[in-house]
Structures are given as C-alpha cells and as structure tokens.
Length: 215
Image (cartoon, rainbow, N blue to C red; front, side):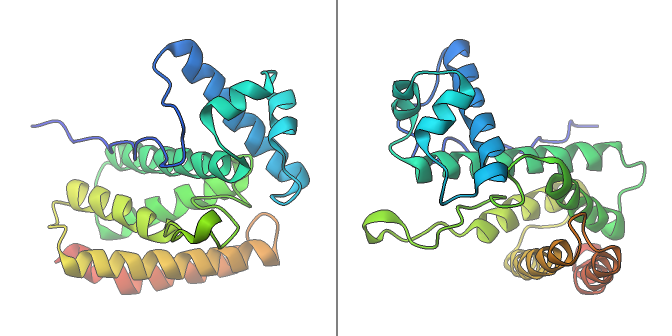
C-alpha cells in the first residue's frame, strides 16, 4: 500500500519578514509565538504588545521585529501555526482510526477542533485568523475559514478516496462556517464547551456532510 500523503504546512505567513533557516532561529520564533499565545489569554488582542511578548519569550525586542513588522503580523503567524497543527492532528487521527468512514472522519475533524479550543493557549481568541477585521493599508483580510476548509477538504479527499471537486469544496466550506459559528456559541455558553450544543453541531454535520463524503 502506498503511504498516505501528509498534510503540507501552509508555509510562512505572508507577513513574516524572515523565514528561519537555522534551528536556533526557528526555536526563537517558536518561543515568540508561544509567548504571544500565552499573553493573548491574559491580556486579549488589543492590549497585546510586541515588547511584552519579547519579555515573556526572553528575547531582545529586535528579535521580534526581525520576524514581524507589528503585532498583527505576529498573531497572523500564530494563526497559521495553529492551522498547520490542526491539519497534522486530523491526519494523525485519520491514520490511527481502524475503519475510517464519513461519520468517523467528521467526528475527527470536529473533535480535534474542540480539543484545541480547550487546550491550546491563545486559541480561544485566535484560532485560525486575526481578531481585527481590517488589514492595515486597506489590504483585503485573509479568509480563515476558507483556508481551514481547503486543508480539511484535501485531508478528507485523500483519506476517504473522494475526489476533491467543486461540490466537495463547497460542502466542506459550508460545514466549516457552520461548525465555527456553533462551536463559538457552545463555548460562550460554557467555558469548556456546552455538551448539548456540541452534540447538535455533530448531528448537523453528520446529516449535511456524510452523504457527500460517502458518494
């Protein structure tokens, strides 16, 4: 049997000034993003500062600006890292599922998202996109749910042997948009995620997506 392709990282965020080449530089970038995530939980996005991140990460402020022009670019990089990790978690779950069908695949996608909501620092505020709606200079903002849907669609197509056609991409995008709204509602109702609302979300996704994934 041919090896199952792994999800490819989305690459460095567009706002990343410099892509780390050496391991030491990559580790410093990781510390900066870890510090950023922790401070988001403590202060929120508006009060977040690059200087506070540098202090928390134990690096000179110049190291932060070597990678990022401002805090928005830093948070965008954190969001991209979250998306890469999410795709890796889904792929790993799919591979260890003895019999992967449409329902178990949907469960995997939803369960890993909820698990990150509960455990990943900064994820409650910044999952796959920057909170502020407008980009500096009037640039068009990224579409986080569109990026998520693209990655999920590729994983579902690969692991279920389903063509990643326009119909599937549209269905997955609708599913992602719907799940994002309902999971946010569940976590507003309960800091750990309201179990009844999560169950309703799961049932809705099964009814809507499973027929397309099984065909």
